[in-house]
Image (cartoon, rainbow over all chains, first blue to last red; front, side, top):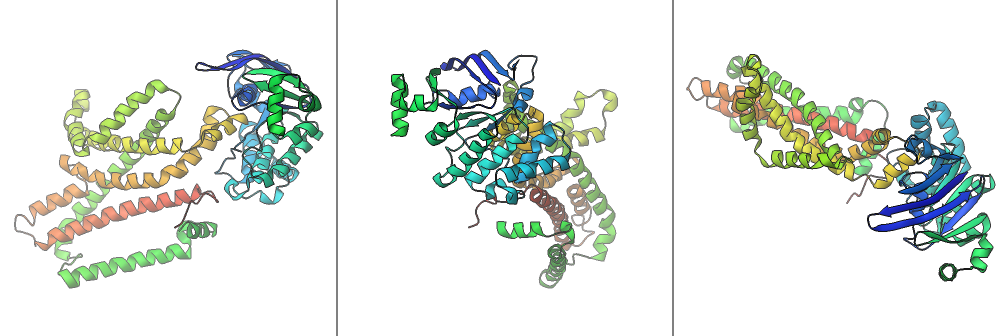
Length: 241
Length: 282
């Protein structure tokens, strides 16, 4: 479903991604872990072209999307994204946040979009909050709205960029539950997270990234219990404690 | 304050037809009446002096009309230009940013009076001879006021744009919006929410700045009043009190014009109101 091939990215003198290649088959949940500054977020942003890779290829559903003859907007419609800081549109109600993309980008009829939006809000457990504004919600609720907003575009996959890192501990569970349910329903997901419980239970595969390269990849139990590389062992040791 | 506004916002019906608004209008009428009576009683001015108004009324109304014309010309011009300047300063087109900053610094630093003078006297020379006329000088003078205000409005819009967090644009792009769509649906409404209060401020200043047209004999309210007083009071044919009565009337007219515009802006502000973002009330 998603394939990145030898991705490189520089920010000025900084060589953030140094040749990353991986595949995410349909309906797989892939978790990416790694220390801060290792390039995880940049890698995620390269997939939906919020960051343009300097070198390498990004494929979505078999189509190379980082080509001059393909609009990046098209690529972004195929792949949803959920951000660490939620980034809900503060001037719109919850329902309008969810329907904005379908109406403006897909040209969907307003009523149909609202009907669908309400269903999606029910799916993330927020039907009663449809007419609230983001600033009136808790962090966990905001992040669930953000997930509904991504789903509203009928994406082929969703990218999660540390979706629980900005949350108070008591709200982390509800967001992870929604994500786990999505994974069960067969959504293709790439998740950058430090939630080891989620990684072990939901992910089929884990990538450990450090200094812009994939150091190790494997099933959760391999990575957490029998890491092969010293750097993986050190990092896993720190986060599992 | 914020809570009170939120309550008003939830009431139904158009803003000008609510009991609260009707009461406010009644208060203003009553206040105006008390003002007139107080002037009469304490200072001996008659704001409605028939002898004065029989002479001055035609010029007064013509002056108001002319001032409104200038405002109608300059306000949209300055908003359009100011918005463009503000956008350019935050846009990806870095090459345009510094000419804009030169523009802003120039017009912020030079007295508008000087700009108006120069624009009306020297400006027409830039046009072919057949277009040159007294009216052209006036139009250019008015434009100059707009250019001056646009510099300030540009900074207001720039601040508005810059106060929208980067993540908002990321999120808009992540659902597949093109840059212009993201601008229209996501960035602009939020930038405006924060630009509107300082913008009403600038509008009030701009409205009163149209009185600078008097220096180039613009025929505006300020100019006709000055002219009238020169020809009546200062030549001895008019009562000395007229001086105060006329300027009081002029001040009232400017007040009503700025008040109307700032009230309209308040209504627009309500439209962009987002619950939960009221900020603090101390």
